[in-house]
Length: 310
Image (cartoon, rainbow, N blue to C red; front, side, top):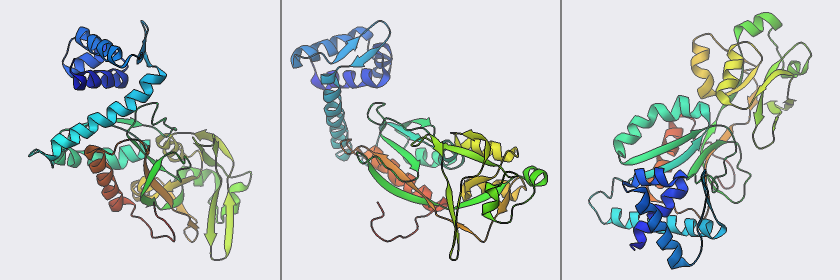
């Protein structure tokens, strides 16, 4: 038994959830993959996988071994890459999860440039605003807006989103243009609620103008948990929106959104790349994180703060 082949087959079965899919990606027969894993289990004297007719699941021992196997495989990949002429061309598969508006408006339009630099990196991208179980779902990193509260993750701050308040002309024609943030709490005005995955509820925003501070939650007839749906609701005139500049800019230029309370300020929203501390930072993950950080500097550069910037 080649231990490298066996570990690679085991890791691919875990990642694809299927012996058949693992065999296809490794260009092996399903029988070969099954035999490699059986030999690996015999050598280790533990069961790594629970197999049923419908799914394959890690055992407790298998979960521990998977993390170590992935690190060893990545170490070997890095060692081979660093000693070859392809050192500047990292390769392999990356699993990432990013917010839907960020994917649509910033990340995906820029990916041709990334793949021109790193043609051998395959990106499997989850696009959502949900909380991702990075370890359980075998995700290499996530990009998220807002402070990272999970202390088990390493987070690198890559940008700061400038926020503004906007409404569609149809909304303002129907309900009138508010002149002070406190008016958004009136029964005559409406906001679109954004349900944050961490709390399961819409959050209040704080606006400042000189010494004035105003906390605003507002009243909504619709609350959503997806950034693209949130923007669509605002464009449809369902309520006032809090948006990052990059989401609002083109719609303001097209006359589809109108900025409100421009003499007030909102605290910028930090953007982070987060990954587990025990996940090996492979060359392919490192170049992806650095590339995303550079991309954010074009769209939402970091604002210097006191203390650690992550």
